[in-house]
Amino acid sequence: DYARTMAATLAYLILLQRDAAALAIFDTKVQSFKPRTDNLATIHDFMRTLAAFEPGQKTNIATVLHDLALQIRRKGIIILISDFFDELDDVIKGIQHLRFQGSEVIVFQVLDPYELEFPFKGVVEFLGLEGAQNYLTRPSELRKSYLAELNAFTEKLRSGCERNGCNYVLVNTATPWAEILSSYLATRQHRYR
Image 1 (tube, rainbow, N blue to C red):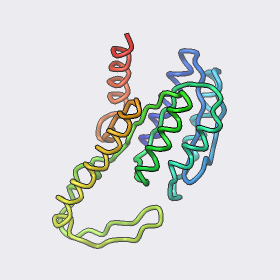
Image 2: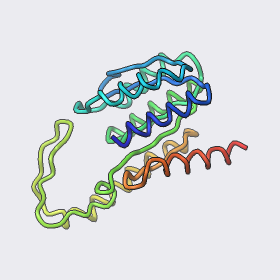
Image 3: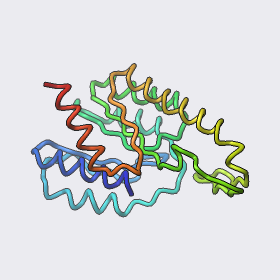
Image 4: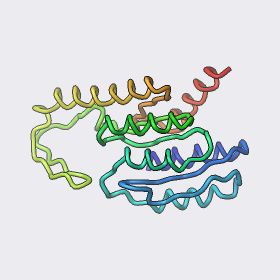
């Protein structure tokens, strides 16, 4: 829901300044696509599409990024909003492909505070998503290694983005999305002056 709201807000801001926006929602492939438009009235269609999508499939971000890179005809700004829990080396190659095509890429990695802090106590059953099995465990025994793995993962994505000239923003969903976006946009405006 947080990512949906960010996407809708960014689309609105882009259309409001009379620039064109498109929308692609994907899992293993693009499930819904709204073509490039500069008509502000289409924001309602964008929002309906975002609201209607129900995640559930395993993702294949790299394949989708490569496919999009081959389809994009105009250079522009591509904003990726995801948790990026996928094969990271392949995802970074997909981002490279978009950059090679001449597009600017902005990455918002959206994570829940529970993913970032792993504050669980006692015995907890973790439900497997995207086809993974469930695990019953004591989080205190996993916390240190989990946080080390997560930090290595986010750092690898961040450095991969930076090596490819992309903006990377780690988003904690405990922070209001308006704060994240206004901070990023202010930083971006300052950088490009």
